[in-house]
Length: 543
Image (tube, rainbow, N blue to C red; front, side):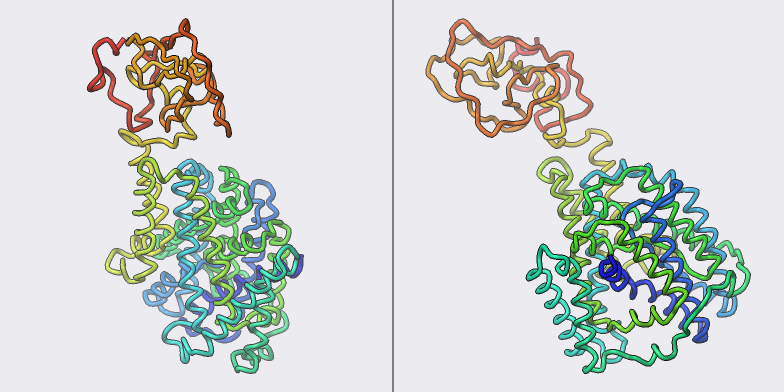
């Protein structure tokens, strides 16, 4: 359990510590204040992760879900620092964080009911965007930091990232089926860090400067202030975090083969809200679920929630003992980038696997996927795409996950549920709705004489063809399985071998099965016509 838990800690540590470091540096905090911010972030992440994985009293998802500080809070926090000044920024931010966490707690029952709006076509798009949106982060890590970082993108950094990736893939392939193969990410990062030492990529100075013990103090940065504009922005960030966390939870449900239910989402959001409220008290920021750890679960195939519980306990310990956190921070960014390519891509693969269940060959689902991916990729490919919009709107649409989620849910409702509806997935439609075509009479296969065609009108009398021939396999929407009559109950699954041809019997004719009492909830297939006579149908076929 310990190596698997450490693998989770190493994969999320950089993303967890980046927001407090960026915000603290921008506000000009001292080293002691920065240590306090980091300790609070680690402690809240650990407590939130334990609550998510263990789950008690309706709080937590009871799944291997990792919590941490949301990166979406960085831009609003920097804007608050500009408006309120450096001295008043943190009290205003933490006051708004308290309110945002309370909003999350109040909205968790409502948000949990949104799972019905996430069929495979929607959840598959969202999960795919979760993985794709994180791949640029892996690229930034692989080059050693942002473009403005000195030496960023050097051949040494890229080679170190590629070496880490190669070691990870080699261990995963050579030790497949063994435990070491399941912690290939951890082995790759350890090997990459060792290789980086002679290259001068590992800085040991922070290890000597880190305090041995630290205890986060409630309201250590001043009593919270409640400023309406800052609260409004923090609430928007909280909503974005809730949507991203729900998307990560859907991805985790697909990876662990435990479909996400209403109560799972509600419990997860309650843990998220409590962690955010506690963060406002101790000096942390808005919490969210980390998708990179979902990818790690998919890659390692270690689905035990107790491994993630141990990960949370390690984070809590690191919050009290900063030296442990500094040890993890020794891993260079290029090493994290090489490993990130694997577990970020694993999330995207989980989304693609979900999309295969969405029947993209029928109806409007292919159109929904194409438009959703476009809107989700706009802010990823061009981060300044929505900069001229109002700040709350830009915050929501600036997250590719949130924008794609909103577009997918809206298009699915408009195209698949409103008005004419869609061409449904034939596997999910009852046989009596698929086969009951206007003006066409259906017969049981057991009583079909050889040579009879389902396209033949019942009122047209023909002598049965006595030439033995197998009945052709007619494509959907016509059902060819045995006893597919209207009102005959659930349809039978298709058989691997076709039924043998029936012997001709002149005395058996196609019995009439009336379809005039069958109701259609919507246009279920492309041949469905409006009530009344179909074009090209003889008058006597309307009986």
